[in-house]
Length: 189
Image (cartoon, rainbow, N blue to C red; front, side):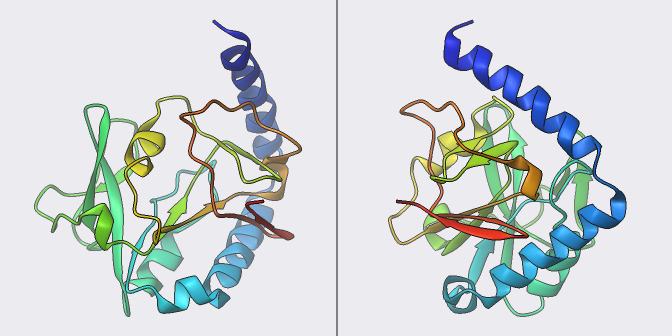
């Protein structure tokens, strides 16, 4: 394991411990606040197609926002297929439990090309003040987003405790345009 990988492993452990210490009320309050901030952004308001993620208990909550957004926008969720992510339109009655225990769109949902998406809401284990992202280490989002159009905006979302001064990163790690926590909006320098 190289130094960057070892540093990421340690930072993942530290951040997981921080998240585990958040109460459910705190998690919900921070999640609601971040979603309100996103909904106020011009890039959200102008987007017709948004990609999000179906949150796990240790991630910033997205379930309510996805349902709300799907009333007026096309919402896309990822589905793991091998080493890649399929992009499928969200339908509340067509969700499966995927390989990692994550709710994913059923295979009969409509596929969407990345080029059709104006805004991507990206989860992560940790983010830094320069909008670098550290995921779980599988590279799904980095592989997918390396092919995005410049017009597609990336917003990382996190609990306040997931923001650190610097996350270890490599050349292939995709940087966010913005990172939003309940108390701050970070903009890519």
